[in-house]
Each structure stands twice: as C-alpha cells, then as structure tokens.
Image (tube, rainbow, N blue to C red):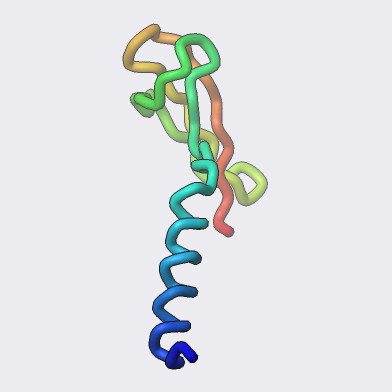
Length: 72
C-alpha cells in the first residue's frame, strides 16, 4: 500500500501536468490593425466621469486608438 507522501507526490505531479496542458490566456491590449502589443501614449485626459481617457498610437503601424481606464 502506498504511503501518504507518495500519494501527495503523485497528486502534485498530476496537478502540475494539468496546469502545463492548459490553454494560455491572451489578455491585454492589441492593435486592431497589426495585432502587436506596443503602444505610445500620445495624450491623457484625466478623470472624465471617473475614467481616464488615453489616446495611444501603435509603434509599428501608427494606428491610433482610445482607451478608457477606471480604478478597479
């Protein structure tokens, strides 16, 4: 009969293997034109209705987008 330590070790290996097989989650801002993640902040307008507006420009293709941020 296996010991408790051996069972815990096996469960830990199974859990680690399951975590490694999980699909990566793609989060964050991407350029709608070239799909890169690199932006310059062109300007910021503070606190419009409790949100901060930022105008961003893609470093690669130059496309500009507007993002609205709020404190969580």
